[in-house]
Amino acid sequence: MAPQPDFYYVAGGGPLLDMGPYYITALIHLLGPVRAVTGAASRLRGERVIGSGPRAGERIPVEVDSHVSGVLEHAGGALTTITTSFDAVATTAAPIEVHGEAGTLSVPDPNQFDGESRLFPLAGREWHRFQLSAGYAGAARGIGLIDLVTSEGRASGELALHVLEVMTSLLDSAAQGRRIELTTTVERPSAVPFTP
Image 1 (tube, helix red, strand yellow):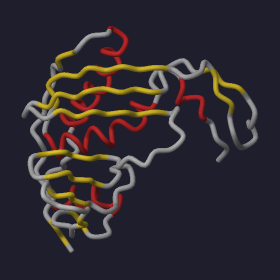
Image 2: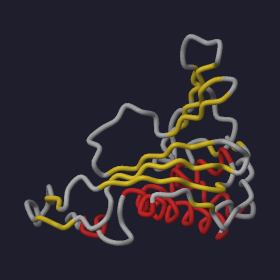
Image 3: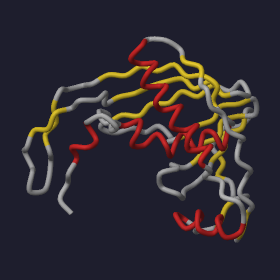
């Protein structure tokens, strides 16, 4: 299929609404629900050029912010800094890092459904890869199907609504220049049991 990137750059698009559901859902699983957000956003250019396919070279308008950053205040007290961007060329940063009392946890990209988790302990000198202790070995995208058959689903409507409110509130906060308290919450989903 030829690239049709227009929808990424109109109302309802942008990097936060495109990629945010993966990362924010993972963060809620790790750190619990979000109670408030503060956002900032920018638009690097007013138009983009399609890079490949039959429309290569065509200019399309950018009607939404293409770089969104924010702070999520979790109900349990943790803070998350999130950045989603269509303007960044590359990064060496881990998709998600959690900094805590005992060290730093680096987890794989939730948009890839697989990958390595690593820990850098407080008194350590290097990263340590650790074995899976939850999930389904090699499950990739199939985990949702297995989960639905064996238990009540973790991707509930309440979770989806909360994630959506986090994202739209970040965008509203960026537009209004103020912190926004959320009106929804959700129970932190239980951990996935390990099934080799």
